[in-house]
Image (tube, rainbow, N blue to C red):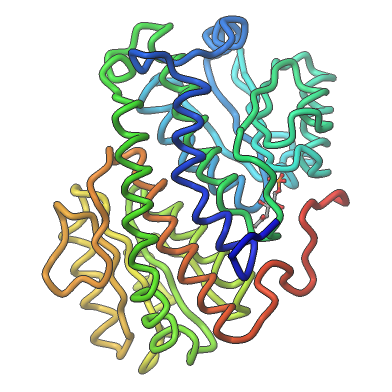
Length: 359
Ligand code: F6R
């Protein structure tokens, strides 16, 4: 039940700290070492390349997963839309391993790719929130996302669980194959920091709602921009906002805007900037000035160590690779309030179903 919440989407956003704490209990031991079935890690350790397939929000979680796997295992990792790979099979390395991300475990596009993998003898792991789902049953290996039932059509806590479980698998695999970055990666501490960080973001929901009312709802379009790990978060943030509020929103690698799309910026166009990457934060500030000069209304979401006094939302510090767990929540809340305050059915946006079982 929704309990005291007006919509499942808000309930599920607010459940994310407990999802992370549960994943800690479920998948990490006292020392913070992953407890993942040794068979899965053994199979993964034979791979020379990882291929992640998914759709929609799960695809966006896969883009974060790529960065986690490459940092923690040094195994090159590709991410593809299942809907494309099913009929235009990507070039394979000698020892590929397929990872499927799916909240429902029923997405038809992903099932087509899994059938291809089975036919070609490529080993596979499905991360899914529905343990007995088709993808979980048909893959060689399956792991549960443990997020609890997700009712709202727009995925929130399943995304954060997908990011977290990929981090767990990547650390386990990296440690198995002797990667120092994996041994050094403090999962337990950062899950705790992320859970607290999400709580802080949720506690600023009134400010987020005001910003949504003032700067986002009046516009027919909007942009999210980010660099580094913030780029895939910008894609997910944009999907969330457009699917529930019907405000056309695109996510951009921040510097790409000036290569064409900046022509769409007019007076009052909302541009929401994510700043979690220290390597590119000065460049982000420059990209923000470029859109301000064209009249954009900018909302900045920055991690504490990179924040300036005028930033709108300041995020607590979490390991860079896990910063999406926190930054995405601000975007989920912008989407939620934009839709709710427009009077829309937040949990059931038009034209959408919770699981997409047609290709
Ligand atoms: C967006 C959303 C969809 C799903 C996509 C894949 O909020 O929920 O984009 O992420 O349809 O679904 P699953 O993860 O069930 O395979």
